[in-house]
Image (cartoon, rainbow, N blue to C red):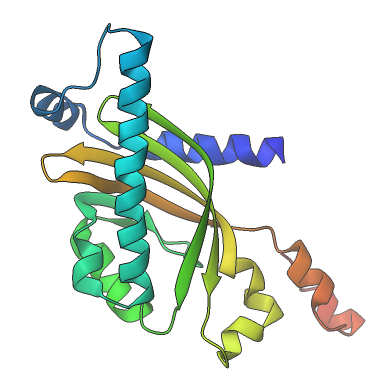
Length: 198
């Protein structure tokens, strides 16, 4: 569990490195975070940032559940780096994200989050969640043991604070290990099992 979480944090840290330093300097001039102030002010800044970002992510989740692509795209930074649930491809830029969501979003269903960890650093917010895709009843993909693992897992997100509020700069959906899916899969013949792998 600890090793998986460490890997998870490393993935998010790598995503954060994609935020250009020049952009960070530009934002810092407009929206400076607390510097060498008291612990109370730092704590208040962190609390406010988490509350604001939580509200943004709740609106994002509603737009996702309602297949509202236009509303959903308002939450992404134009240089966003995104890996959607079940995809191995990493998308760069809001245009690529919008194209992928246009084809993927209908029928995916709602999504639930459970906060694991969060950290604020200036105008950047790092958030780790567990997620669960809530597929529609009767969806054959929801009942398939081979897709069960891709319906749940963890997310690593970087939000950046801009003039209009918090935007998603990086978002990676990391599926849960497929151990449960393998255990519930039907038995296969010895010849076929030699080719299987998780």
